[in-house]
Length: 422
Image (tube, rainbow, N blue to C red; front, side):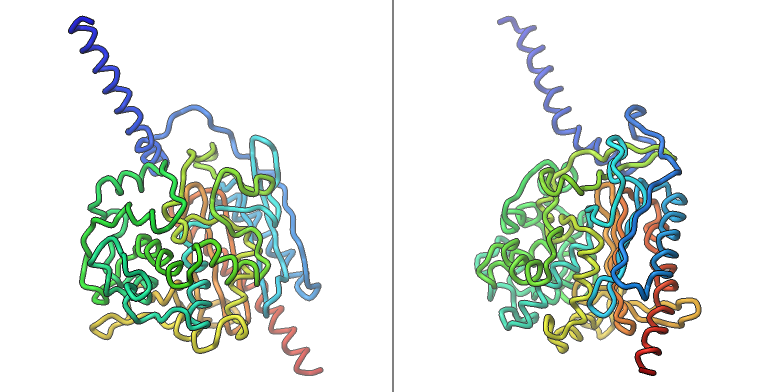
């Protein structure tokens, strides 16, 4: 073989390696920035969207009808392929609705059974499993995690606590602060598969802590991944088995599961990227490295049921619930900047004709989808909302919860008044 042929072969091999390594990064960049997206493969989004609702309590018929119209209007406004929501009151699902398309190319309408990526709302899911472990006495939030996982791959993690990991006050890096360059690449490329949360620690286990544990707040999905690995060590069960036995099976939630190409194909929403009024499917990704932090799919109905379970004292002990819903204070005594508790944010909001309400919530942004889950204890409400696109501003999608509460809270008040008279 001549030197020229060897050189040509090396050039081809180098170019092939560059494309192989670089294509997933381009996929990340193009999905983040509209101007970087290729011009082909787009489909025009139509306005005459199908709509469907399921009513489980006739007392909320008017509120349900109004809410379905609200979904339709908002879907059109934000150019979403579909928009879906569900509401549970006093522990029971009362309404679910969906507008738009689960799959545009196949002309499959979205229904209340449609399943979406839920992104970081997965953190409220893991918090539910953690609360069950605390209720059963299997986990203490304030002991070093090395008590449960003595073979941690990073010695800096030994004295961290589950409370710190679940409240983003442990000092672990976020995606941008990750100094494990191979892990950083894997977090962007999303082509590697992990069967065990403990294996996924390799994505960030060589990094330093960003600040002394407990002294500051930095939202970190890596902290949630580490928490899931600790939970399976503490319980003696694989993470998914633990979640199934502690949460999913007792609540009969059959749509909350890992995001894979194989699951729930009949009801699975295609995740889309948007370019004006045009859409095309999001690139294929593997979210297994951050399962507990952002790798689940679910229907809004099952998420609403999960939220409602937090109001059931037989499912989560009242003292545990109070602890999980109290925003965590830093070492200086101040509440963290996001009012983040343990797997939930706690906020107060003024609702027209209702007044100020306190709610627990967690939003989620994933690849071609968004999700919102909130609990309003005062009214026994749990509400979940999902869409199969990402909006530039998250609350262009999520703040429809205000309109939905304005529709349902008067009906709840009326029902409570009638019950009092009776």
